[in-house]
Amino acid sequence: MEKHRVLLVDDHSVIRHGIRSYFKNLDDFNVIAEADCGERAFNALNAMDVDLIFMDISMKGMDGISATKKIKELFPHIKVIALSMMMDSSYIRNMIDAGADGYLFKDCKEEEILKAARAVMDGDSYYCSSATKNIIKSYKDHQSNEASINDPHFILTPREKEVLRLIIDQQSNKEISEKLFISLRTVDAHKRNLLEKTGQRNVAGLVMYAIKHKLFDDINV
Image 1 (cartoon, helix red, strand yellow):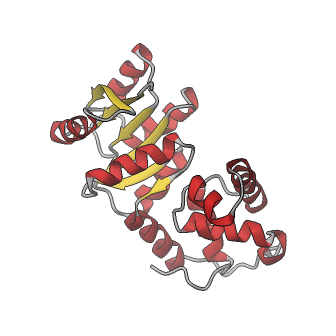
Image 2 (image 1 turned 120 degrees about the vertical axis):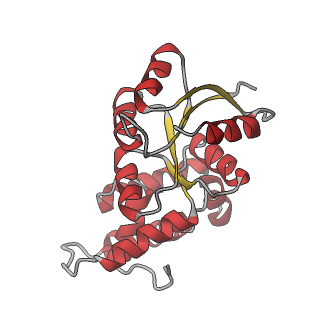
């Protein structure tokens, strides 16, 4: 089994060392390089092939948000997971808008770091529950009262709403497939339709859309 190649970008060596140590004996991931800022991350990317990056946000020089945006423009196949102490929803939204595939807080458990890594390499997004709650709370606090031109209760099919509900619950494509007894290809098709119909770019956007249009009564923060 070929291991996924990982680049660690963080200005704290203890963080990089901790992740490298945890990933050392895994069968599916191999940390091949480290960088302490965005500029040095690009030096690494120009010298070797990388599949996954764990990206800090607050660093000297090029920050993680700017680096992620540029990486996604130049290397769109590379997955990026933010690993940061920044808990403010504005940082989370900016990182997601830059193209990050996941967001974790640095106080998360090692098992969740691995869970996030495997999720994004399987084509899913992964946001820790605290990050999701911060996004939802922020959106509710600043929620617009503007009426939608198209009623989402009618433009989304019942099955699409079922899939959306499970996405909000952070279910993986495989878990959605098993719970709804549909193929992975069908799950992917529903996700594409949801993004197209709602005009969103990612899972975080779908969560905000569901809140704005009150599609579900039990989304709590």
